[in-house]
Length: 475
RNA sequence: GGCCCCAUCGUCUAACGGUUAGGACACAGGAUUUUCAUUCCUGUAAUCGGGGUUCGAUUCCCCGUGGGGCUGCCA
Image 1 (cartoon, rainbow, N blue to C red):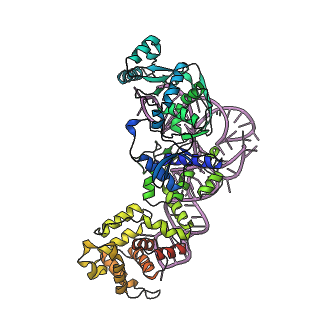
Image 2: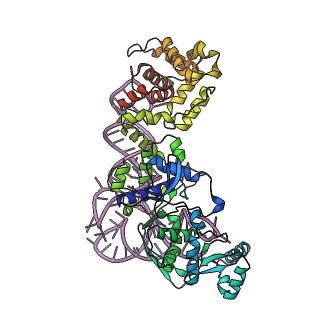
Image 3: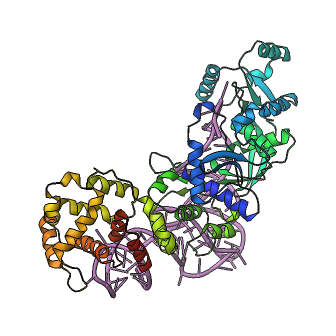
């Protein structure tokens, strides 16, 4: 699930909840060639993770996908199988709002190419609109592949009021005769959207700005079918740093990426809500319920927002301190990857770094122990490659023995400093990194982020709770 | 090329036509801290350009400029 779609889903959810409406999931899978196995599971999992549970449509319960609601099916391929879109396509054709087109892909390609050469806007030239009804019947009867195109009234001006953008106008003659039914019998998005949103009694459509230019087509279709269109809100796009449309190439754009990195659902929700919307106050931290209470479309920004995750880490820190003590250990624990028995520290450290990017200290510290011969002493000297997670407590214990009982006053800073300098060539910088986490774990004193990480790695949940209690956690 | 949308600090953004143009993140400096954390204080930093309208434009209008989206038998 793309973060941009996730934000749109959030906005839709918020409006649905604050207006006592239903948040509905419909699966738009009319392009058979582009269906990705497991995609719907992934999307629903992300929604569930964030607490955006659908009231109706395609739902997931106990990991099983099902459908709920009286206006189903909610999967367009199933609706297509029922001949639902075909019915309305025929109505449109009968009323003269659509016509069959037999043009081949090759001809269309050549046509567009020629139009571009002549510096014209690429648009269907209506060759097939001039076909006689006899010829049309004959070619259809002969089984010739064809599509159904909508006949856009060129003389019309289509005007509409977008909830975010206000009044927007289009001249009919610049709107292309969009394909409504493909030659494989599936509808295109345009037809499916109009038919389904009417049948499912959708009264508000929140979608990305990339749809704005096809809105006149949709409005015309609602009109041709004699239906009242929903309200529309076209939200601005999320952008790359260079202000182009947010892409996978330049950013981590999948919600699953952020889940894997250990960000809390509250954090992603809070972050995304504020990218393009603000309450008009100085409040920065919002729970889902607060968003439901305060969100409004008229405070959504018109300009696109750069997807800059810098603020995400700050939010993570804020929420880490905010969540209840009782939840804390349970929510942190699963973030630590299950390293294999024979994974070395390097591997483990890399895994941790990869998965918990906001705990920067621990991997370095683990590496230090791993590479530090004088600390590892005999314990590690001969088994460098075989160190297991299970060995960690022993290592720490050994360290404790070497350093003597650790107390507030008798802290063997000198010795460690000396060793650290010898091995790393650096001084206090590494020392602080090492001492505090270690001390915290060994003595149970709540202190550093490294301690948190070590405690997680060792499964010391009591320590986690103490750390949390100290309320001095960095992100 | 055509059509449509947009334009305030580096980023996210606030500002009934009248503010020293505000906040947050990031950054810099400082205080607290037996950590590179937290917390606190301070600082650097913006209205794309040009015309109007007005006593007065960030705000309203027009023209530029810049950026983006669409221009598929994809959504």
